[in-house]
Amino acid sequence: MRLKLSKLALQDIESIYDHTVAEWGDEQADRYVRALWDAMLAIEKAPERWRLRKDIHPGCRACLSGSHLIIYRVGNSGIEISRILHGAMNLPRHIPPGFFKD
Image (tube, rainbow, N blue to C red; front, top):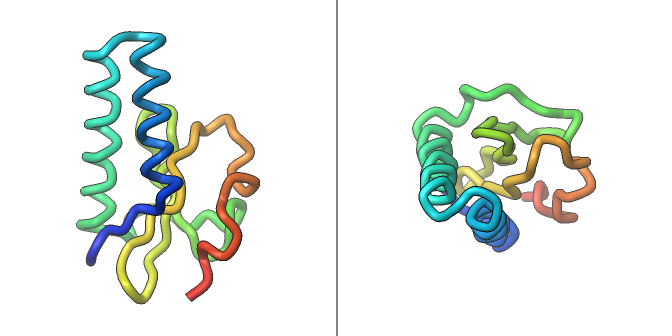
């Protein structure tokens, strides 16, 4: 299945990278973001592997990578990554309205 990232998910990656550089340096930021991309590739290969997370939104799934959750769903046009959020955040609050509508 094809993997699609929302604009917000791409912004999340950039913010995670910038924050990690500021706190722990370039090398750690590179490793952390590379691990996020590896997790997304794993989602692409086996999207049903991760459990449904109705507590976030009906029909979505979440894959943990480091301290972040990759929030996605399997839609008609492929795998849609909505956000990449820190696990301590109020996750449902940060899902864009209408993202999970076909």
